[in-house]
Length: 234
Length: 370
Image (cartoon, rainbow over all chains, first blue to last red; front, side, top):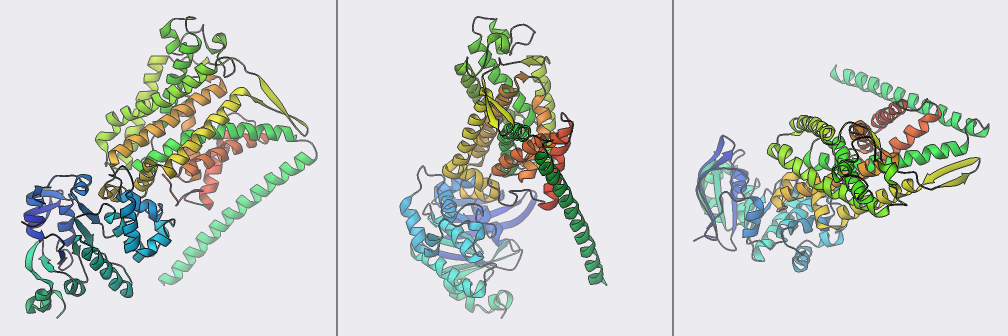
């Protein structure tokens, strides 16, 4: 039984159905990516795990527990963290305050977790009193990831962490994701940068038009002729 | 073609802007020049100006205090709350009912006291209510105004706004106009539409200022002390406490606050409590300061508070405080040239328009801090 087990999920927004019969699994400590063309429902699939879409059928289980219909703060309690793609920091709060917000559901700010985040992203320690809104896109992405790591989640959901970053920062961002995964957190990443993501992940899903198309290890997908032709630009 | 048009349009708007700036500049230079000359040749006494500034500051503190709540609900719930003025009135009545009960225990029937003396007869002056003679009744009344209005604001939120959460700013604004009417006439129904005096006179100190005196009485002092303490309290709450940080986070980005695990409904409830509590306190202090209470003073104050909050940059509590002071001081200062009374309202809105022409987002706009 996988840690995250999505089976036959139908979901969308309001009356508009985006996903039909989507299956997703993430094992403990696994690094899974979702790739696919624009509008395939990649982000929607991730948001559905976090309870941000309209549920229309199927199952979403985490550690064997049904989490459909739970609110985001309840899902956070179960051990899932989520980093949205854009506008993912509180601009008028300082870096440290942003991180503290990540641990809002706890009574006290967990000092050990804060230090772990600072160790993971040393630049945040140096800039802890800077307003997050005044930082560069790459640094804001670190703040956003750091905030989601404050509760030491079992599973981290990352929605296009490399989007909008300068090319030389994209690699750095992937390295951070690797490091988070190595430290024992399972990650589920939606990526536009499919080749790089598949190269680094354990397993990949190719989503097309709101449904599963291919599932395999990253390497296998990278070398699959069809996948290469259709989704990786040859 | 289109680039030529662009250049022409840009040039036009630039010249309009510059024209406005020049006009404002000339106006400011003329007024300041007149003021300096008038002071030098003795036609405007310095103490008179001092009195206007003092009164302006006191009035500004009330507007600033009341404006904080308006600004908070704007930044966190995204709507302009037109019922805020009547919340101020309601808070004043709730608090003064408490003050009357304590100060006038036994002097009149309980109902009469709790309803702030609806008929002519026993009122504040006869009961001898003032900060010096009945300080306990005043402090208890202020506390009751704050706490009572905080709870009242949450109740209104439950009944009127909560069912419409997420409906957008305009439907909520229209709802709040309805709430304002309902509140105002509920106040008239419960407390009557009779305007009445609430306080006895208190000792005052005449401070010498060059060529005359500026007098400050004990109620002025109470107003200053209470307003400053409350404002400082809000500032510390927003900057230091977990709740305050969550409020600022929500005012930055509600969706992100939700996915971060911040219990947004609880934060909204606290926003109403704090904003409502400050509105009630401001209403109580306004009545203490003016010595009269009536059913629509909050409503009449509301447009000025809007001017203050918008001038300061809506959404920022510091903008509300500074905006209140700017409006209060300029309104009273303008009495040098205007006959006073309602004419000063013109000054308030002129100031607002001028500031918005130069800084469209308001003085503190763009750096919202709940």
